[in-house]
Image (cartoon, helix red, strand yellow):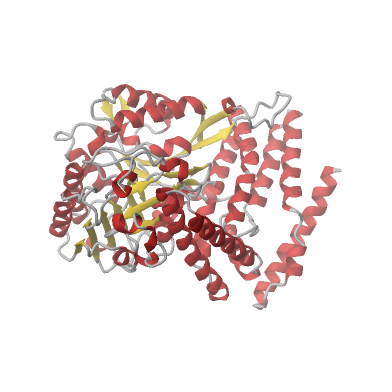
Amino acid sequence: MLTELLRLCSESQHKFDSALANNKATGQPIPNEIYDLRPAPAVMLMGHTALALAEYGLGSIQNSITQLTRVLHYINNIPAFGITYGIEHYLSSLQSIEDVVYSVAISHPTDSSARSLAATCALLRKGTTFDVQNQLKYSGNKERHLIDELQRLRSRLSNIALRRAMLGRSEALDIALEETSTSIINIDRSLSTQNHLRWQITQSLLKINPDQILDNMKQALPRDGALLEYIRFRKIDFNAENKWNHRHDENNNYLAIVVNPDRDVELKDLGPAEWIDQATERLLVAVTTPSTIPYVAGSKAYELLIDPIASSIRGKKRLFIVPDGSINNIPFEVLRTSGHFLQDDFVFTYFNSGRDLAWSSIPVTTKRPGTVLVLAAPAFGSSSIDPLLGTLLEAQMIKKAFAQASVRVGAEASTEALLSASGTSIIHLATHGLFIGMSYGSGEDRGLRPEMVLGTPDVSPFQRAESDPMTRSAILMAGAATKLAAPQHLWQSEADDGVVTAMEVLNMDLSETELVVLSACDTGRGGLQPGQGIYGLRRAFMLAGAETVVTSLWQVNDLATAELMQNFYMNLRQGEGRSEAMRNASRSIRDKWPHPKYWAPFVVAGRGAPLSFVQ
């Protein structure tokens, strides 16, 4: 009966695809009747997954893999179940299907088709939310008014939520938050019924061919490079009575997939997620505490994350890392092997998804204008916040490397100056960064502690913060302290309130921007959604269009960062690639600043090639 039901669903899907294609060819609006032809997604997805499990139970591994391949083909054609919240909920619901794929693969690691299936799943699924949001941002004029209103409301929501997290709850803030959230949901529902937009999003994702994506990634890789995909998933015991029990954390595992340009995919089960999560936490503590020697923690992380796949990356010089889970929180540069840091062996570049490697490897044929904007040492408006005088030196050093740089400090380092930076080739922000929900460091660091703004300790920002990490990640510009501490300014100065959240960054147009450097603390941190990358400032700037984003994973030291950034920009000026320039800059200060806290906080995400205007 299940087979017959899937046959009928497949026929309906074929009619849907044909009708959609014919309608697009004529250029006519797409009526709702066409979407009514589409079979229920849950039936197709769970039906083929059930057949895959049945085949697996019968010992027919290849038939099981065939069914799972059909599942991947189907879920790649994502309908618009809501453009913002709906898409993320839909993708989250696919997690159990991905768990099946990965669990089948690690149960048969010597089967090349099983390894390829797992790699294809990772390349297709990780970061899909990023692609959908990006397609929404650059969609056509038919829905432009709704999209513009959605972006305005998102910015308003981020302002309200951040103030609520910093200042605590109030009736006015609660009402504003509820009204704005309701408006966003209503627009989301309206957008999800816009058939033209649904067509755009679906077709953009269909351009990714599941049968070709793995070969495309291999072709995009340089000969001396390898792609490392890390995946946190729930390992299924197919012999267990209750295969779908999500309550036991001990079922969570990490998986490593290695894609090389000249060999078959490698796959390794790295073991329980608890081991790796604990190791990354200990490493993060070790590398951010100058009084701690990080060698043991670095070696343990290497043992868990790299040693199982060491033979697959032997002889390579460049590693492209797609982290997942807690692995997002550490730089691979500080892992240790044979008495040295891994930074000495490889140039690292980080991605939200392995698919990003394809576009980042496309040569840039048009030189950008080479404009550079530096915003440093903002006048925060409160003596309780460290003025970061070291960033003035940092700005001067960048000016030496790029004479055309426009340097704005003090009151001129404003929210307006940042949000109007469209068309700028390089944007450098040397200021405080903030991720509400984390611990905060000493005054020598570029980190904002809530009591710095509010003048009162123990405000517990983590407990008060809203669930969306895009509102909890922020950078501080001129006037931030004064405006955040004064609730009466909430509605009077929303457009330029001195705090730029990740949600506000989403509204920027950085399609001409080659490099964004967030020389502040915690700018690389954010909330984690399994398989969709880290949500925060890095993701926001990339969604806004920036080719490369340099962010920090912990609170940075003022003086060490100024020296590191000076060397980084000089390296860029001399034509080094963006990833290579950061690696060499970092290594250049290790003798003076030997602890990783000072030389290893920054990671390069996105295109790692040289800047177009200095080649």
